[in-house]
Length: 328
Image 1 (cartoon, rainbow, N blue to C red):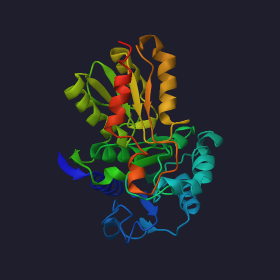
Image 2: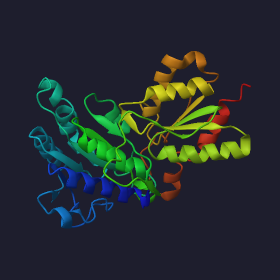
Image 3: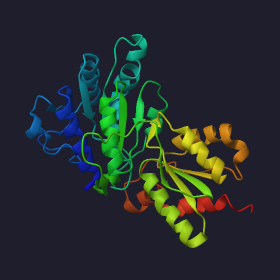
């Protein structure tokens, strides 16, 4: 094990996979000379050259479109977009093409494409750079969606994504890039898609945290234990497509309560989808309505004081958990 930052774990995954497979190459805005907006690609241009680490113009639809074509021809491109907000400019390529080509061609052609995109609030980047739109891609059949919350998962899931024959939307929270954690070294650390992580075991309530909110959920769980003697089980889905619903249902059937925490908007979000699935398949085990903690239903403010109240923190999670016990 080595201790490293989230961004360093991503960099290590890219380096290992580029060394392992000559068909893996990178494209994106400022990823070469500038080392990427968040320095994830630092040093890779010098190591692998400009044929495999390609700076591109500011044209997201074109970047992803080139990635789709390269993937169809047998390469394994990893495209970096500067923010998930800018991925809207590439929706045609991601949704209409990358996600559907294997289906339209009857499985004769695959699209092993990874589109990396940062998201999330906390850095005063305003409403055009700060939203959490994992629910948008969760809606689309034909693509896989990863939302790693730890350095170890960032590395292991990115390696799995690059080896995957289906297109992957790989979402990295901007707040997490500087977070440190232990990361297994070596080429064999690959985290499978569709396998949730139980971050903390508990018996009283299940808290499901998406992306950065898995970290927030863990912190809230520790405070619940210290202040209220409530032992929360914290689940990090790690991937949303495929979703490890079995682990979630097993936990809810044990604890009989559930709170879902996400940074995205409340309407049509990941939490709404999870709540519906849990209600459908574990309703008889619930002792209270499912709680949901989301970002505010507003464009992300630029002002720091307003931005801080526009996405969830530990107190909101604790209040939502306590609300599930009020009828007792």
